[in-house]
Length: 386
Image 1 (cartoon, rainbow, N blue to C red):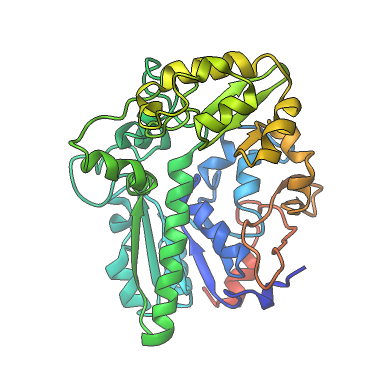
Image 2 (image 1 turned 180 degrees about the horizontal axis):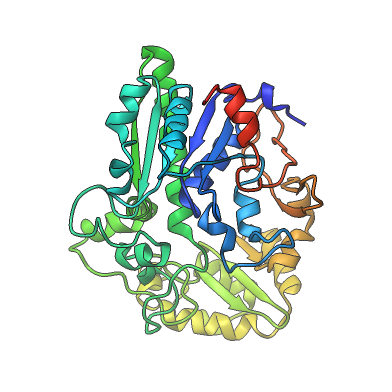
């Protein structure tokens, strides 16, 4: 197990003024790489995600809060108290990174925008995550994940044609914005190592969702601005031809990726694909017809039966797993991506570990998320915040 002192960001202090998912996910990744994350919370209630509906934990905080704020420290700061704000400003003078995702205008009213923070600490890497950037007609709109997905165009890539817009089943804008922010912070820290100066890193949910679509959006802009047309049958990618999709089998689902129809027809024993097998340019135009035929054939046998035929022939395919199947699989277990985090008051829950291995080892930190203000006394003394 990698010790925190051995990790790339060991010794760096991150002041995390963010809430919900995007900012906390960013600082979680920095923590997993060795940084010390001090989470700034309201004395009454703390981070609003402590009460997220996703699931309640016996601690009184949501499971998602524990998962995304594990191994951080909590400093309760009353943003209306001059004494507390002086302490926060003093902490910022000693920090390496600050992350905030307040709605535009709030951080300026607190007097802790980038210009003000840079005067306090020119070496500080300052990161702002917003919903839609810092200017334009959407700035004041709620920067919430579903709303950002709605404005990004990404919903028209999911589901079958005729279904209407289909959102992702998780807060993908939040998570991707957090990942983009972490990437920018790491780059700014590298530059600081050369120049000695900090800097400003900015991203937003919308920018992260647009970047996610670099492949397909670039096609759209360079192909007459035609809108994507999803397959009506088993759609999985708006710009890929048959057989690309997910097909119900007798006992589950089978995903088939890029595969020549001619080769697949022989392996599936499908004479009905004969009209399509040697006409590669038509595999997109006739993908609905081809997929419907393949779907009918796949439904006649179990997934393992098809895998036994297709995998030895180097067909790109896979069983579609649900979470219990994933967690119980040898392919997942060998990655060792789960850990149990706990707290002295008996709180204990299982969650994931960092997706990044450093020097051949995956970092593991076993402390659950803190109580609101749990580390106030220790932090005030250590950083001389009085």
